Length: 168
Image 1: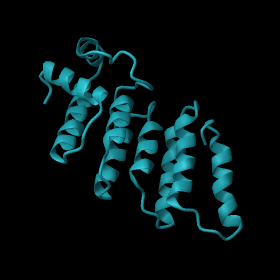
Image 2: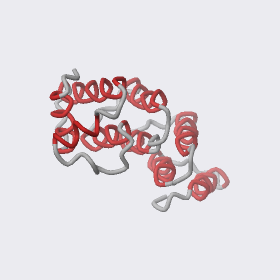
Image 3: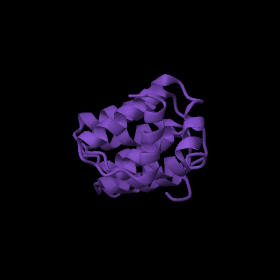
Image 4: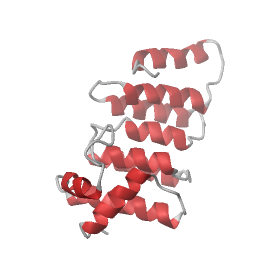
């Protein structure tokens, strides 16, 4: 999964069914991680397919599932990424600091924390984005605070930048 081989990850899951074994959520997490690591356009569709398959076989997704699923949405439309967070909330899965950082980086189409080193550069970077993404980020951070989730330094920098921009 670490090399982004979606077909290989799917074949790995198929092996479970061929042997009448039941894959566990960590097996699906690994396959969804392959989607995240892939450079293929539409990788979010493959990740969503695998996520839906895990639900079909009555597995309970965890925060790792949603972290990988969100990261696979780097090039996806905004509403598809938002749907990941809504699914997570609907299933009662609590976000952690890793999910929050991953979600924010994906929301701002950053595969890493480049251009987000300081509040000043983060403000410049965030000004490139439509208000709907900025408001979503503010909402994610507000939820984290309300749920007493300790956020990463990067997430704090984004939070401070949003405050400086008067996004609430």
